[in-house]
Length: 71
Image (cartoon, rainbow, N blue to C red; front, side, top):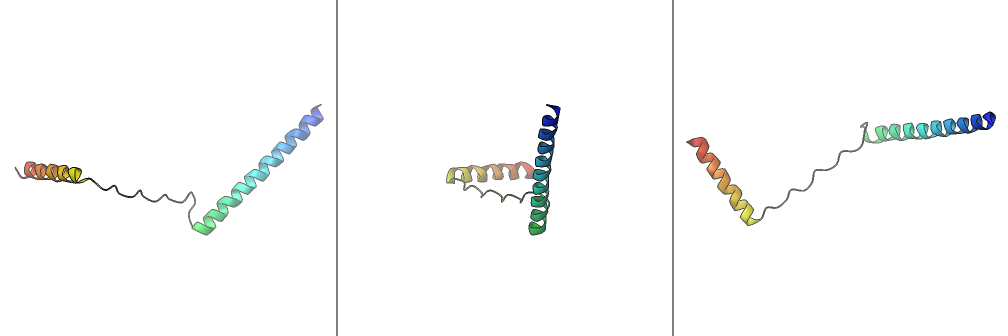
């Protein structure tokens, strides 16, 4: 029984070693191809277009802020 468990444990360790080696290879290839060590940066989201009412409210708020700073 212990011999069987030893074989199972040995198999699991070899399988984990293979997975680790594949992961290391992928990391090396990603670094070699992209030149960065890590995931690629995500693009910034597109800016949202403000409705005319929101643009008007923003302009009014900026005018009030300018008046407060000037006073």
